[in-house]
Image 1 (tube, rainbow, N blue to C red):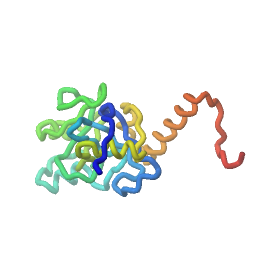
Image 2: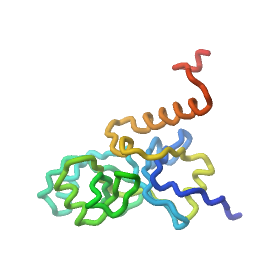
Image 3: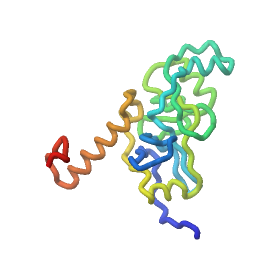
Length: 189
């Protein structure tokens, strides 16, 4: 039996937050910036998976040893593909994901970005991809929560981005429901 879902609004410019029950190890506690979401599929990058490699290490491995950029390379997802970067420089962008946050994957733009090495920037190896209707089905199954992406969340460097975004979601949910105070440990009630 074919699965049919009402086509949801595009998630471009949203954060996908892995729900606690999401079992896929590639996405456990992941926060994904959605770059594209159409009837043809979806593409995003995981914001909170820094690797131990720096941009300079990675570029040295592929024959570009003159790069000095010591920023970590992030694992953008399980799908292989070209290096990509999110940053704040419109002149070096191919796509504006949200106001003030841009994506680049063209080699010429990436070369300039990593050599400048200033301002907010994250570099990704691989990406997160979904085929036609796949992400919509996962959303219907409750695998993901969503929140509008912000510049602060995209460039957050702490190890607890998932916790921070979930806390913000929870606080907003309680406010929307009219709850002013919530106990620190509800199990004590």
